[in-house]
Image (cartoon, rainbow, N blue to C red; front, side):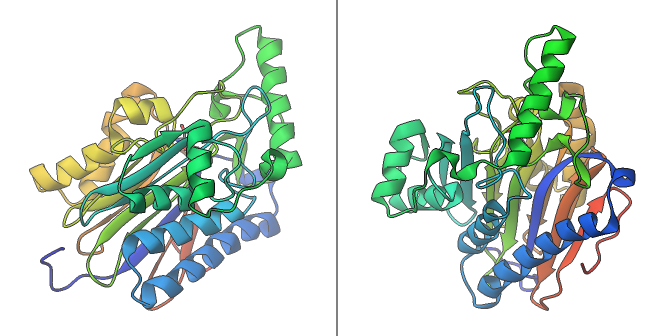
Length: 336
Ligand code: ASP
């Protein structure tokens, strides 16, 4: 537990980073995203205010994001090249470095809940595919049909990416942020957006936790796993140091050990959370092709919402219950 006597409990969330198509959408469409972020923050804040442990608050925030089809996790997850869904999720508790990760699941309604169950079971810390689904079912997690996650918009997105790949004569595009096609009505271009969701929490007891959940990248190779469920890459939390959840080109975040590098800089170099996150997002990741962003909260409640893309769905809420959200780079956090 942190030794700090003055810390501000807080929840920060992200719903993915990416390219902006501000001009092509209506204020009402932007507002829908802002309100979705706000509602998730309010939902999770009830647990924070009630004194729930950080990992439960983080999982609740991510569960609510999974339930919202606007974001690429749970219902609304993107499609693989085979037009299936393979979802990944992770939760990590800063108090004792306990964690649970799942990869390649396609029938667990809320992968982040299954990750929490895995963490609670005390090992193994990482499970994949059918065995992970069997574990989730045994733990009482809600299971659903494979097509429960599918939305028409995501299928159209896959077909567009595949058509662009075919037209270019290159192997099918694996990363949706590099594809080219027409623009759907969302503030961040759905074809150029990393839509993972995540939450970081400093609870009222001074404990940290992080959780992340994703459908991965549109048109990804079946079996491909990104950074989100990889502890130290897409997710990390250590009490008295920092909690981190990332979104972006998973391969780069894995190669740069992004989340753990933030923690190491805070812990070993004594950098502030703002300094450490800026270093990783603006200096460590770009040479690796690491477009994206991350959210982080330190032991005192210092929050950083940092990205090198043109926007990131993001927000935060403290004990006062005022939800602040933003989408674009030059957006100040504000009530929705
Ligand atoms: N990081 C995720 C992955 O590579 C994608 C995302 O952030 O949307 O699977």
